[in-house]
Length: 246
Image 1 (cartoon, helix red, strand yellow):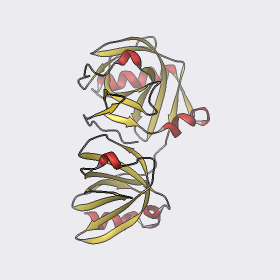
Image 2 (image 1 turned 30 degrees about the vertical axis):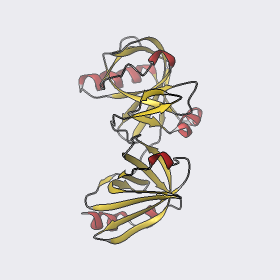
Image 3 (image 1 turned 60 degrees about the horizontal axis):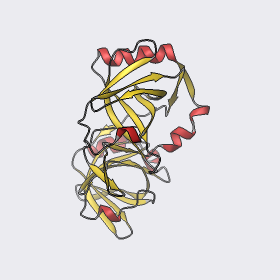
Image 4 (image 1 turned 60 degrees about the vertical axis):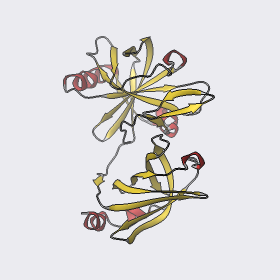
């Protein structure tokens, strides 16, 4: 799961909310019970390593009124006895009423793994939050493939009544990440499949239906992660992709 900062906002029922990333991985939450587990001692060591190496984590919040949760980027302070304070790395606008949200998980990107850590909120404010880790965390989405950065590859995202154009940012055998622009994102339905066309020197190198994994929220520009529905990338050998996109 690639997570990057994107400072935009979206509106729901007239309330403006911070949206660095909308969380569209409910499927991961649903798989927690069948995932590998990590005890609290190891989680503390991981968080302290992130602190001492000036790394970051994400805090996953859900709202009882809205379907999709949000992620806030944070820097963890030293974790002692399972209690950790997380300092926001992005300015939190006053319109985002943190007290109205449920603090669900800390999300840690650990090499090839994603770790979800259930937590109990102790306090929250404009500068950060303090939480108590629960006894176990969950290791999800073991990633066996490398992502390849791309330059000079044009991308089109097409949906009924919608077209966005831009560039391919990176890819792996599992999917693409594109950065596209459009004046009509209000007509874009992230729950429906899209057709993506990729061009290298005006030649089509990929065209096919894709599911939307996640996206940033912006009025004119978005980054969208897509997964081909029929696994075409895996059949098209990575070495050929690398040659095309060098």
